[in-house]
Image (tube, rainbow, N blue to C red):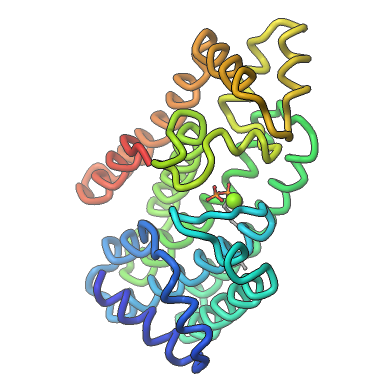
Amino acid sequence: MQRVEQEIARLIKEIDYDEVTELFNTLSGGKRLRAKLILKIAPDHEKAPLLAAIVELIHGASLLHDDVIDDAMTRRGVRSVNASEGSKVAVMLGDILYSKAFSELVSFPRDVAEIVASSVTALSKGEMMDVKMAEKFNTDETAYLDMLYLKTATLIEAAAAASALLSEKDASAYALYGRNLGLSFQIIDDILDITASEEVLGKPAMNDFVEGKCTLPYIYLYKALSEDDKKRLVTLHAKEIKPQETLWIQEKMKEHKTIEKSFELAQKLSNEAKEIMSKESELVAILETMIKRTF
Ligand code: FPP
Ligand code: MG
């Protein structure tokens, strides 16, 4: 991973703008999940650390923009760039990281570059769907999962497939692994938004619903509730909620086991990915850690 951090630092230095370097250094790198995957899938390829750095810059840029879109004040436990520097700076820093990543991507074989580039269109589409879906109470599970796939899984899928292509492995098997890892990762994220505390999350708990996002536990809850309770849930959607209303939602979720149901789907997707990668013990270990994570 040190080689990836070195590559990231080199690319940032090449941007040749002190403001950018300073600002970038204040960001937390996060789990570097996508980079780890690339190094594990193409450990011997000399350009794997560069590919990993590119994907992490794209991911970082997407989060900078996402925090502006979501009006998020914190990211990974620290103040978001839009909160500390304003939205204009956050958008432009995102643009700089994103375009620098693409300038580097053109040095890769066409099929590798194409996979990564088209995944960025997909994740941008997914983000737009997320925003649109949050405008009203969504109860469509398929539409929700399609959006999750685009918003979160496509870049992980692309990272896995592109690194498989680099090391002449079966790209479609690795793509499926990445897709399922991404989907189950996001479902766990949605669960943690409800079950974890603010200190653990580094952002307010139960924030998704306040932001208008009807994640899987809410979709399952809506389906299980009586007509009157359905109406009550819909009136709470997309606004600040009182502690007693939060408690009501949590109790109803417990009663109808909607967290467990959501977790089962994450587990099913993760098991499918484990089966495909049964010979790759390190990739299986990533899935296991991800499914058990509490933050
Ligand atoms: C986080 O979702 C957001 C994403 C994973 C994707 C965001 C994508 C864009 C803004 C498209 C633009 C892309 C580029 C490269 C400039 P979330 O809000 O559900 O998760 P969070 O809780 O981590 O904020
Ligand atoms: Mg967000």
